[in-house]
Length: 444
Image (cartoon, rainbow, N blue to C red; front, side, top):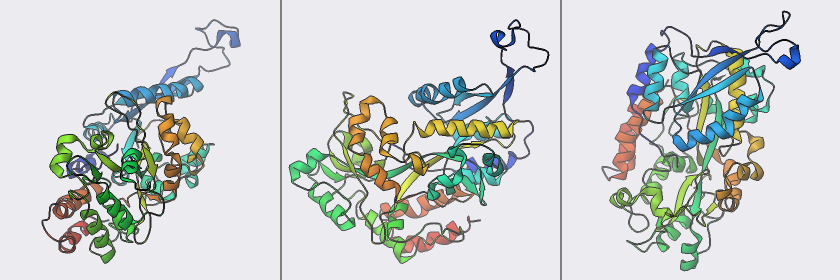
């Protein structure tokens, strides 16, 4: 499950030295052997009239762990590298301290050619000149994956900076409402559906609670409170990036609704209980009836057996059913030695990931067939019962409005507003009023 983590401002501050770093990105060309059958010459000698074909190697940095790296290699990279001879992609995973490592590499002129960035980082890296502007390069690549107009608009915006394209999103995971049907059946409560609103959700979360053994819902700051602010008609960063109206009546309404759930023992486990037993682990153990998670989440027992877990769209707020979509993009190092070919490699890589990760941010790929085929056999039955809710959620999903100093903004929002509200250190209205000027100092 993708969870919100606190970002330190120092990760972005170091980017100021990237632009001046000497050297180029780490792409290299190797000579591929000529075919003796095609040329009639020995394999070691190319025909005089034909230059040896060159295969350019592009390095890819990602945060993928061991299991994810294995899947990426076998399901995506091996297929790409076997399908053509112009380039190959070599994966260099860095699951620990990822952003520190790529920042250091970029500053030293040894950064990879292709890099994964989560939605919070693209604008910041682009603003410092660390990323290649792909706007025109992608227009020359013949592939639906290269057409930015084919992406969900609220997802594609996370890969833009000043209306220029600096990456291609490879995942758009909307938050959905997962639920345990056995606990609903035992309580004789109808399963969640698209008629549920905040009131229905809160009422049933309490009805499903039998503390301390069972709770209706679990919340610990995930999903982001932004989602509930949006559902109430508010914003945290305005679309024009000029204000942070977290003290608006709509924003306060969203925050107060979430505050009424989080750590409230009438419906949710305490912070200490979550820390002791685990956030998603409580849900998988049958101790929690409802859980909001990403579309790609899978659930298994301690014995490794896929559980009977269903899904619904998230409850509707006063103004909308907007749901948060976690988004990641692949970007290209501004110093890459072969920009045109790098764009082709980026498109091939993104297309491959679109058929591996869900939900693909291309609108034409947000289908039941693509989603189900993206999962191994083990999860087919589980996801078959969830796919309608996942597809329905794509119609209401959105990502953050992102600014270059997003990590600093996040730290202020978390430390000086959100955490204080959750721990009863003041009213949402008063804390929002105090935090807003500090947040707006960080806007472009």
